[in-house]
Length: 158
Image (cartoon, rainbow, N blue to C red; front, side, top):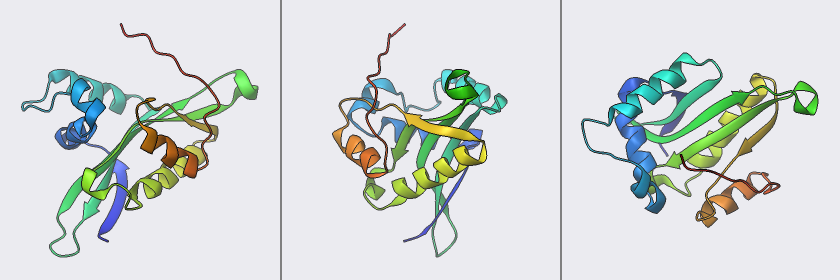
């Protein structure tokens, strides 16, 4: 396997991130990968970058020959303060994607281990995520990592 590293995303990573988000049945319905990118992606990136409790992350694959770097995964970490649970902070993991060619290769697990470590380092006492009911493979993956489906989630489109 090539080397994988995790880092905070830069604006230059946005096209690759959007491509990853669109690379499945649900994502194709929600994302727009055409260039130039919809300016709302850049506005969202700027808002995330300006908020110390948000972190857009990429997994970078570095080829052993030539050192070429490719974005092969992404997720967003949100650090949420709360009064509940005696003032506990929560880490929220969202928008998780791994390049199709690398799914089931172990990179997702590495990325989650890294993200959970970041949540611990920020003092979070709980890590949570939501996942679409139409992603049974993701459900199995999260359960394998130790997450439990303890709550029912709701959304209201505006």
